[in-house]
Length: 371
Ligand code: ADP
Ligand code: MG
Image: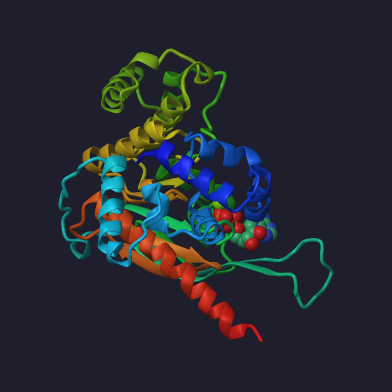
């Protein structure tokens, strides 16, 4: 992916419209600092901004990714080719490694008809006109050893859904089972124990304890479990080698890079052998190099430790590492996509098309309800 070319292209299109960075930022509802970062090739627009940005600049998604205008109609195929080339440049080549048939595997997570309604605390209105239906009748299952992504625009209910599965919050309806155990009806003490023993967490803000070294952070979860010190040391050393963090075990979190901190968070999450690892926008604060490393780490967790991972992400590149994607909108799962036999590149293109499709469907709905 040639971010600099894309940035220059965005800059040209913006200037052709006669807009300043500030004006474009205003139209997109973001800061002009973000625009400046795109235009200098330091970052890519957020997933949710692809379509509005293309609409404003009157360019296609293909043109955005190619970083240039594609003029002739007969270039439609060429455009797809360019897109594929760009994606391959970004993701590298990969070979599909078949997993065992998912229907033959056990489901680690079963979510059935789950809803979450937030009643606005500030309202005294008994009819709850201000209630927000953050998650609405959602059902899906995740087989053991799979890597599943949840995508959707901001406010579509991704974090709420993840918190319900994490036992951090309770649904207002439906059932959630982790390895056959219903987590909805548990008491608070039971959920706290369950969370510690069965769920691993990786968030955008690393959640490592600053006063402990990386080693101590990883060991913490095992110390609570009364495991002998020597066993702990051996486990952590083996794991660190696999995740390429051996050399930083004695450092403190603030002494290492964001990417390294996230790999430590992975080590800490997997070390207790949880039923499922939940990750909310784990690449959100990382540059693309560190993101790729983190995603490769996830792949190692799945392959070598048979981890099951559920990851919320905005990022199409991150999503294309998954085995399947759930697309959320307005608290509902609108579509799912499995990476069947596809390479990451094809899956990436597939996800982009899906996002476009969901956005378009949205416009159509809007047209129908508009007078
Ligand atoms: P996402 O993670 O996809 O951005 P969220 O799950 O954070 O979305 O939010 C989904 C919807 O629920 C939004 O409309 C949000 O405003 C609302 N919401 C989230 N948390 C709360 C809360 N604690 N109280 C009231 N409304 C909330
Ligand atoms: Mg969120």
